[in-house]
Length: 355
Image (cartoon, rainbow, N blue to C red; front, side, top):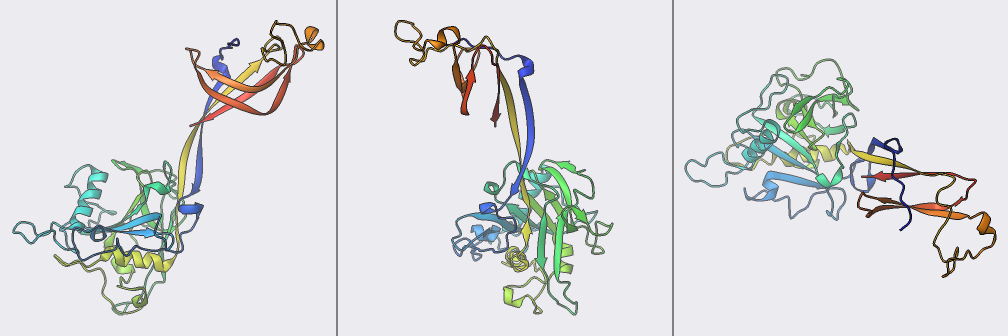
């Protein structure tokens, strides 16, 4: 084996970079077209996945789920009960969803979501599919738009623009069991419009953004005031009712919200990845690595094949091998082109390992 040169501490440098990419499939920045699966979006049975959440896909092949929309209610209203047995009233998909996410955020099933001091009975959840992002979603890139319409004598407000407040709060976040928590506010690219979290009087703020866990929790009460929830896209401008949360009834509120998101055709949020790099500076001094056992250099008897190499040996560095303390080869770096080495030259080669 060739002589091995141990790296000095100063020859090894660690670095961490944040790489930001688009979240959606095919590196799509804005998810403007959205599809659902007829086999998943089934609401007739309380035990079906469609009764719990609606998966949203990027194209008609429904091969790559992008995000899911769910509805949660503290008392289990708005969805069918699992059974009609005595004592089972309210045990339903909507109750499961509410309990699941307060368990994720608070670590228990007794705490309640409070939005700027307001505690609603129900919430919506938008959960980004885990395959869509790297380490976490990037705060300050969220741009979610939800279409609205008129009802009960109130004029439509157009489209609701929601983002997180990470830029407004200069990155300051509440830390929960689900990681960082930012407020969902009216605005764009992390900046809140106005100065008040509560933008619908008596209803609290719009919700919370959890970039480390990849989900958004929306407060149903201000959405109830701002949006017209309808059954089909063609009904968005009609006088269909707001959110309905009847006991033991499949009100399908999660699908209604999904339709309003789809109608707005604008959902942007970026993915963030921390790439750790280790740089090794491999140094070949003038009196090192000038000889080789390559058959083109010496013959079987140890004689130098090229006369000019007798007084001036020359080698060509093509590969750098990294070994551990047991002399096991653990990494190999290939040079794009050979580096000429002799007694008049020194070489400095930077090897980068990403992980």
